[in-house]
Figure (tube, rainbow, N blue to C red):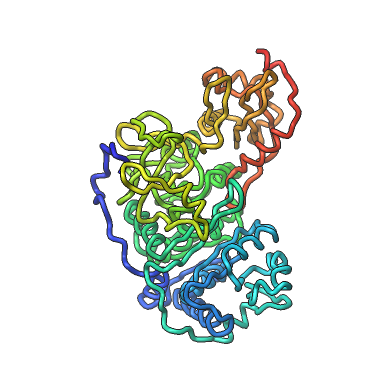
Length: 539
């Protein structure tokens, strides 16, 4: 609740009970109930629930008997989406270990930091990613490594782990044991590990299932990377909670995604905005049968209003925008499925409380004013891994309760719906006026020629900052739009201080492995450029 909530979906209870079980229970119970049902569809490969269960058990037995993994030990998982990723993840849980998912785009230095910080001594990795661990293996910092597909020196092959068929000891993990240690993207300094228990992860999954009224046997498209919480929770853990089927792609391929939705009658798909933009821009998409999709879920970043409107009006696709963080195991706020608001984070879901405060004084702000979003709920992590200083900065006491500082700027309306304004550190100061890049980006997507856009600050010739738009045009519009005309279009639709004074047309925008536009990379490049006055500076 937000303190001023006046609307709540009438079909939903105010709270839901989180089952006091581990994540492993979901796989074990499903395999017992429907062993022959398809658990994973991966290209031409189909893995049954019983097959997935057995593979995970063998991983657990190997981890315990060969690698010496004990309850609470951390294990690194460095892999792209694959059936082996799922079996490895659940095998680690069956071994009572803590999974440390590693971004597949991580460098050798990144991996070395995660290994050092987490204390993990065992790694399971894709063959093509294993070279990044070479120095750790040579130095003895990693005692064991399993290669998921293929073979490599000083490692154990996945096939050999499965052939060994080691039996794990009886499970010991309880709901309040740590099970997941995902690292934040490290917006400042080194990434920080988020301490999640089976209970916090299950709270996120249970809330998502109940809020969206998702059916048992759900068929979900798993395209977002599973090393990230969006893909991990929505593409893997959620369909397994529901006894469903994971229709999986290793990497993003918009044509393959369209074929899979059509062929496998996919019902549920969670994707970052950049992926949705790319998917619906592909030639021939209007001829595809997407009628099986009963819910399309946005996550990872705000979805521009023009994109959401096109999904709703042109494709008649039910689109459900939500909000979550690595620190909240993905699901936190969500729009009511039958009463959404555009460009909205939705309502705090079951048992969640959120508050808007002044970022400096932490004083609560009234509806309609922009401030930092604080939150608390059952899905919130216990804290950061081995980092009391980060905890001291992230957790604050307001009105006698402990809250987590999200670092996101938002406002709440008089019905209790929350709207994202931007990251706290991303504001552009134009002659004393505050400009939130996300707001300007949302307006830019209404331009018929815009495929993607990112707004950053650029130094102004006379000091201070100005707004710059970095834009990818739709293929048919390239060469047809110039900077002056684009800026004039913006000035007709935005306040003068918000309208971009500079525009750069580019072929593509840098993105993370999870499809997020890397605005900080563009911002850093821009600040390194010399300041060159243009006619826009004096107009």
